[in-house]
Amino acid sequence: MVPRRRGGKSRSSEQVGEGPRLTEREAAIRAAQAADEKKADQVVILDMRPLTVVTDYFVICSGQSQPQVRAIARGIEEAMEQEGVPLRRREGDDRSRWILLDFGGVVVHVFHHAEREYYDLERLWADAPRVEWSPVSSTP
Image 1: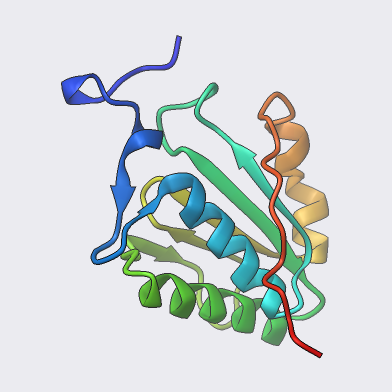
Image 2 (image 1 turned 90 degrees about the vertical axis):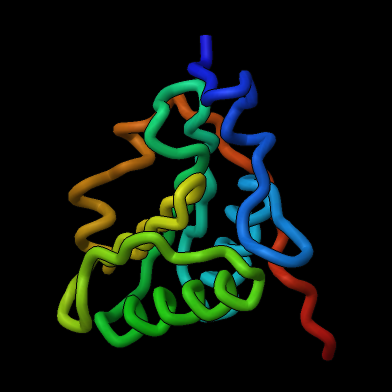
């Protein structure tokens, strides 16, 4: 059974941000799209709701280099800010090979390839269902 928050609502039914509000699922998809726009590799969304009360979704992606990891993280932060989704906490700096962005119901992990392989969050959370998503359409 998935734990519920006060008022009996699951976290997934709550909306985040201000203005036109996104659901947690929509916010996770937007974060994945923003990572894709910065050419992140292997962008995956895991539905964490059945497994933990810490967050609803993990977005996991990787970059080829530290500058790309930084660019991906910045791109996600900017996209989420534009959507009105506040960044609650950021772990990692410009020298980091793993940057964590905490948006509450969505936690984004931006890895350098070697760190992603080492920590292997997809294997650790193998029971989490994957969420289907599509990149933002680009016009030719």
